Image 1 (tube, rainbow, N blue to C red):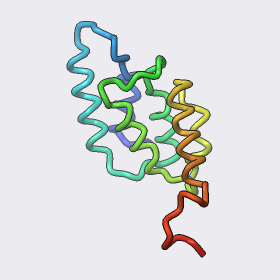
Image 2: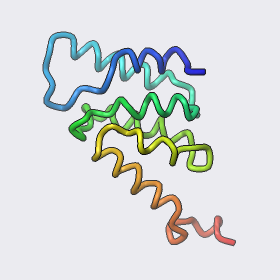
Image 3: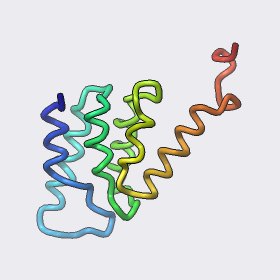
Length: 117
């Protein structure tokens, strides 16, 4: 089941690019920021798939909101299905970012000392 906040984000559509300028963009940015803030993590696989389709297609950050989106999706966790969601990231740049972060998470050299066997 997808929560109403995430359904509303889906209804708003992909994040604007940093260069977008159209009537109502300020309200859209405000709405997206608010909705991202009120989603209680973690997200489900189904919700993460919806969110993965919202990145700006040009790889921009949408004034930092794309980073908030990335962090929210990452609350799913690698062991809970995050790897399944990454191919659905519409932006090639953001998909590469996820892939790199997944690789880093699995690299044993990056584990903290207290995590080592």
